Image (cartoon, rainbow, N blue to C red; front, side, top):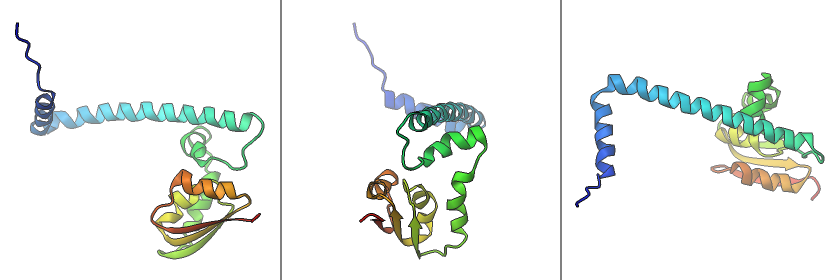
Length: 154
């Protein structure tokens, strides 16, 4: 007996070619699939960050700073509360491209990463405790800008 194993690469390329030749069929189909995938991912991420919030803030000891990804992925959607994002947004109004900045109470580095890194060339982040300054560089990966962290206790 001879078994023929189909070439998966050939199958994939034929599927891609089919969608390229029939864009009227492909686009609505792909949009429906990816829309479903995005909704499922949104639901899962929101639930996971709600559980993280309950674990961090519902059980002692409480953390010293707020993980802004909880706000981004759960709190904003569930409570329609945007106070946690205003600092980053409003500070952009005063920043010119390539400026130098000082951030006080940087916490986990969320604002530097998502807002300020698009405008500043150098930033000095100051926090009460050094581990948070060190953690903010690691958690959000300040790449592409010069930065220094400083603890008020050092």
